[in-house]
Image (cartoon, rainbow, N blue to C red; front, side, top):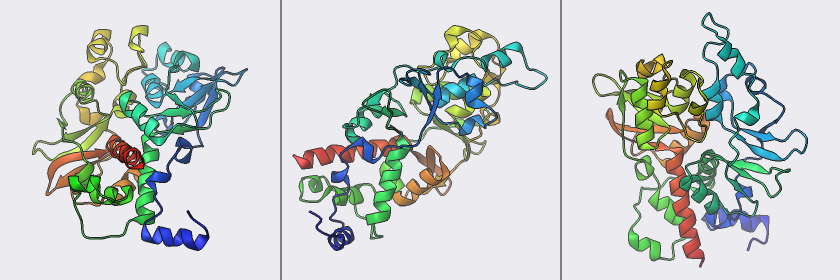
Length: 346
């Protein structure tokens, strides 16, 4: 029990504050600044003249009741951006799609949690349903916040900056889980470097077609694919958003399935107007390659993710590609911590 400011700072100095134990509600880590758009607006109103890559998810509200209708995902916006707008190749469809009402593009079954939900509730939904955005509200007429994987990365970085002091690297043993160690100490021993949290590597040659990248994204359930050159060295990274921005807006209604990250390659090929699919994947890659070593401390990796706004960093050692650390990897680590906290709290 903290009795004074002095007690608080003494506990902080001794790392006895119980950081993870005190995360009781999603309200403590959710973003309270978010974008909304009403049901009487069009896609063109949302996009305006902004860079579509910089547009985040939009909460769509009923224009009269102000109730939540659903979520206009960033991936949906990118999928519908007219590729040839204001160019010599511009067609009627390029202009018409901007007039589409946001209600025709909204995901109406976006995950929602009440303000009483725990961080573990949010983590389980995020990983079980493979979603990157959860709305938080008790009343659909009063949205309180949004939770994304970046929120968890920021909280972990905050923990490191407040508590973590540079010490010789340790390794967590199974016996430590049954000891009297606090969850904070377990975290410091078990997740110190990028090697501790990275996922297995997979990559694609930069000359492979965009269609191959779409298939690999689907097979790996990933949002990014690292690219290699003729020497097998990493030379870039392509994201799902890069590909969505490069593809034409769907020309037929059945291709506009906004419940999946990307249209199926077979459907895109069948549409007959997707020359982008055969282009080298390097030609559409806009994402910047950010790399760390396997011994880079997790605090530095988290800082790279949060400060650069990247979803992944690649792990390399002497030009050898070892794996990636993504926001989803951070979410998995955070879920493990919350599960341990539940066990130790009982």
